[in-house]
Image 1: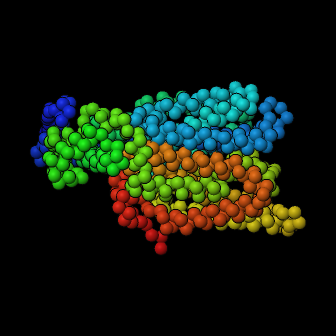
Image 2: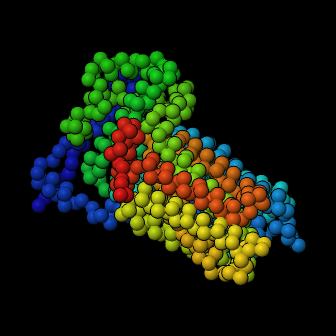
Image 3: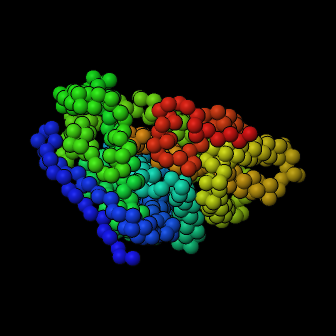
Length: 571
């Protein structure tokens, strides 16, 4: 059977601003060529392999991101009241363990803006610079001030990294594997903690910092080989590049094999642009150009449909008038260069399609960060000693990281089957029970004058394992939500803002723990964590939808309409 190629016809015209524009029209082949086309469809393995390779980028960055968090535990344990080299007091240790978290919101807010204007790929390249500088400062530090500066730089870098990581994964993956690929980042995060805790038992912290400096160099070189996300390229009028990126991500195929998905992205981008225009007009920030464009669209398309006619989109034919009414199809980047573009994006955070998921994600982060593990993580060795596990406290940290890997692996293999909502509720309930029993054990057995005859090592150890296991299951879920629940037009800024607030919660949790333990005692702290997790179970049951298997457009429609089309009942 002879192979016939698809013929491409370029239509040249001028848009309403006098700019040259091109729309590439695909002429359908005959039935014989269509059969040949179907036979050339790539296998499932080939379609998914480039998506996995592309998202190794995010996993390398997650490895970078989580290493400083675990490293603070090792650093504090080595320097707290040390007899040689550098030494820190309790107050200095508390600040050293938490100062990065309060700096991370700065990076998150900057990231939310830069990721929109420079793109996901360039943002991921830039973020490696502060990590390289921070690790080198750690390695050669000779004062507490240098340690603080290194921690601040790494904190800003961590915050900067969140938005591009999550948006890149969400915009390059197909819906059926999106949750799995994103949840793999949770396993990588736990692996980073395991490696840090393990190497701390065989080398000193300076050598460890020097080894960590190699991570940003490796990540930078790998990212240069990966494509930008097609959605971001489309939003900036770079259609040819978007098409090539999509072909790369779907198995290094020819454009005709991704035509349907590409047209859907064009439609989605067009609708996002129309909503952006309406938002500008609503908030009084519209310019003469927006008025002119809206008038032309109203005159030439009086029905003002959200999408083009299905037939015209299917065949890749759009009129010059349609292109004129859609700034996203212009060759120029007029929309992004408008003076109020940045302000408009921030104003769109108050619109229901963004505000509703923003409330969900921020609430989830609050419950996660103040629910126990984030508070005790910088002081794990101290907590283990208080629970009567002083003999093997440093190795228990290694074991806790292994448990975290198992919990994150459980998320990877079950999230598509059970869904994020069900996993979140069960995991938070498990954390509540573990904290309740740890607090009760501390009150009954470890208190002065308590039932010390019942003291044992295995019970608190088992409860700590349970707490870490369930916490690691749900720890990755809000980050998955971060990449999929926000509409594209505000995804970068909303993700950056959510990350910033998350790190404020982390800072609050870590810097307040020692004072919390002093005032409420160990049992009171765990009972407080139990209460927070119990509130979280009720909140997630009533407010969290199930988004597994849904396209980004379907998720946006859910939060826009408020209809519970994505709801997953556990009853």
